[in-house]
Image (cartoon, rainbow over all chains, first blue to last red; front, side, top):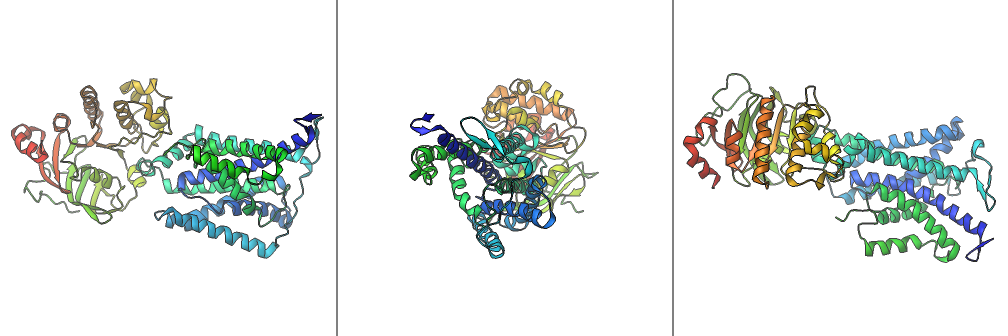
Length: 294
Length: 252
């Protein structure tokens, strides 16, 4: 069975890989978009915190014997709390300066975290086994779908949907959106906006850690896993429109798929296609696909 | 607690009925935006249940006064006491929680929120705020347009929304910054009615206005602001006899 001259299993296999990559892109760019919205900084430490999320899951298993499912909750909580400490004691003191300082600080933090983990664990990476309940797969007739990969997509969709619901449909989300627009006025209504900013950073970073735990059984747990993915995620955030929640989710999945399709039809371009899209979007719609023009 | 009892420039007392501590006392309030010194010792008082206006030309420091009371101007000194408690060291959210609500000049309707979300945004800070039903009764348009984007409302409707959303919170002192600016006469009329109604319901209002005709109709007392300080005061019954002096101050 062929599709446009490509064997169907190959075609669907690449689409699946694209969708899985897209799932990671979506969760990571969603966190970046949240943080950019309220803190106005591009969180360069995002990739490193994704890596830390994976390592926390690995360490929980290795030292404490805590398995995948609890780690999926615990690691985002631990890394999110770490993120809130970073925001409160490193980012808040420089919040009134040029946003470039925040960017430099998070970039430095990323290098520091990667350096520490590289020093301790080297660059070869650690393996993290797929939990027993998610081993095996389904034979769909035209292809084999590993259960874990299906789970990654489902989990990413659930987390993105829940975050979208929180931001767009709840009182807390409305307060966050208002604070993005006019933080001073929201403070004048009696809302502790600095606390809201700290929680938002924690949430964004927690999402990165969640993606890290999801990634651990697929890719090896590696100190450089964050810097490998984060540049692509930055491009996706720009394509979706800086700070747009919907844009981050939609363009994450879309570009993952697009990258997969490129791998089928013109593999040579698959590593750069997202940057090509970014360049085109920046020329045609500088505010991004879902961004509001400034 | 010292209260500077007279206005430096005119020698008149800041307020004649100063037996008990008024709801809001602004005493020698100074503030700065970076290098520029905007308020040079504002002093005035607002009694419970009153409508007090700050009049003055553009750039006199009226808006800065409201923003300074609210804690939105970072560099400030002097004293702002609300219900006898000093608030000059508090942050904006703490000041709001003590019972003061703010309706900014640019209205501050959030474009990423619906009308209903805008209305329900300010958290309740005390008991005794207006119920949402009563708010809808006063402003029926907000109910029918509840799901529209906040900034899709007309200017007058946005002004209604900006006032409506601070009535639910339980705040008793409302700071209104030029609620009539740029609005059609019939809407100005409506806002005047609403402000009068709010006083009847026990709200205290500090109103910044350029539109003197509007201010004299609703205000119990007027302070004239020039170059960041209060230069004169007129009670409601003194306005008629001093109309020329007042219009002279305002340059109209």
